[in-house]
Image (tube, rainbow, N blue to C red; front, side, top):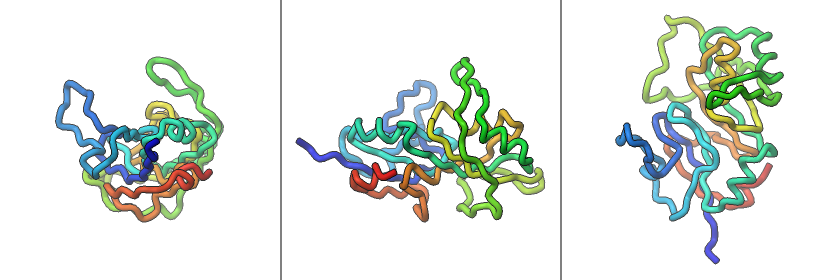
Length: 195
């Protein structure tokens, strides 16, 4: 029986969280397989959309994928939003709210949200966000246990503060820490599953 392999990766902005481009309209997409050599059968656990960055777990073990995507494992995001967010909007995010996913209404679970002050420092993205002359921004930490399609972006938009930059910094006990964009590290299953 072959031994399963597991990796953590800092997914850069502009990459799809997949290894095969199944889009027919845009064939020049950047895929994870261009960042490193990966074993056959590798899959991303959950996804980060093309415009999002940060921690992504990869595995050849489907059971590990199921375990990590379960509601037992927290996923934490640092989110730069447009404007100075008031405490009432933060309370709304914490309590859960209705968002639209694939033309259906979904009520998000209660989650952990707090303002990051001072703002975290990350390297500038390959595509610049915007200049300070366009107004203030805020950074939030949002920790959820679910992972619906573009959920965090839809949540911040629902309270009137669109997401400008989204970086996943933690999955369970796995941390992004000082990993550089595009960096890949192989890990063992025990570390991957620690909660």
